[in-house]
Amino acid sequence: MSSRSIAIDELRGVRGRVIVPDDADYDDARQLFYGGMDPRPAAIVRAADADDVVRAIRVARETGVELAVRSGGHSLAGHSVVDDGFVIDLAEIRSLDIDADGRTAWTGAGLTAKEYSVAANAQGLATGFGDAGSVGIGGITLGGGVGFLIRKHGLTIDSLLAAELVTADGDVVHVDAGSHPDLFWAIRGGGGNFGVATRFHFRLHEVGTVVGGLMIQPATPDSIASFVDATREAPEELTAIANVMTAPPMPFIPEDRVGTPVLFSLIVFAGDLDEGERAVGVLRDVAEPIADMTRRMPYPEIYLPEEEGFHPIDVVRTLFLDAFDRGTAETILDHVSASTGTMAVGQLRVLGGEMARIPNDATAFAHRDRAMMAGCAAIFEDVEERPVHAAWLDRFVAALGPGPGAYVNFLTDEGEARVREAYPGPTWDRLRDIKRRYDPTNLFRHNQNIPPADPLD
Image (cartoon, rainbow, N blue to C red; front, side, top):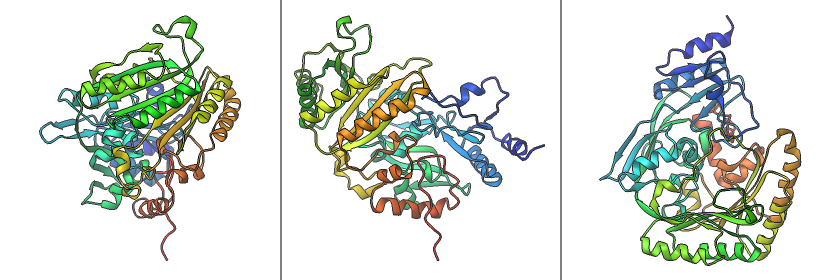
């Protein structure tokens, strides 16, 4: 019997389930959200609790097998699964205990953003996550959490009160501001470098009904710049994600508009509903909408439906912008129209508000003073076309001329230099020191990796 087989037998002592290549559901279990990647793990441990995670970590540590951790499978770099290694899949750790009076919730790391949001909304409450309902709350939280409530309630990590974490030594630790405060600082933005988070304790905010939804408007340099300006000037209760793209064929888009440049925007106003109607109206006045689905709605309905079996192949780059004008908008339009992909996007998110009131060094997410976050992306059908679209992406980003900086959750496989851009200045050194103390052998390395600092003399 091979050492790998012996290790898998050791894994079978978990309360959950071990899925191997011979199992009928193996291909479904290893499937990532994004396409163009085909990792084949030796085993997937669908953990039932923290004890199962402890066992998987111990076996991986003793055998030297590479380890990946999966919450929702949305890693742009494919880090949710590892070829020929072990995957700790948290999807079955799904407990949710909402204390509506205390405005807090303990939740398992396997829930998705929409599942959590629907349950919390039944109490008129919410915690802000990302902008896709199927994202696992584990990954989105550890990387920071930029979403629909960022200007009103900050990043996801700004609502994180505590976490249950399994370290590389196999210890289950409670992490908060008073217990392992250095680790608590690090997991708020440092990704999965420091352990496996199995449960989170979140603050809940009063967010029941919001004003928002999808709005599609013609995209011109003037309309894009005006939309950005209006979002900056809007009350902090309003957050908007504006996608500059060509209009896709959709039932609510007139046929003569398909293929034309549009602002495809998702808008949320989390506050007084009448004030929200007025604030959304200012954005509506930027350009006559082609389609306007904004309305009063329960907060979880902001998550767009996701097509079953859709696994996009794409190239993506994240960056920060500290200035934006008509010329920037024109640059985005020019490059989106020049793409030969099936879809190309320049995404714009105005930041600020509550996120910016917290000091840069308060958490491992160290870009709180940046004015905007942008994303450039193209989706295409054949993985062999990647070099063509990657070259287009390089030209697009170079034309925008951004300063350094990156949001770790939107990084692809871009190398250590880009990971360092996510953690500027002393943040990188502090993270490496904490990594050395909690994971000196870099067991948790299948991620946007922060290597441990060199051993002390």
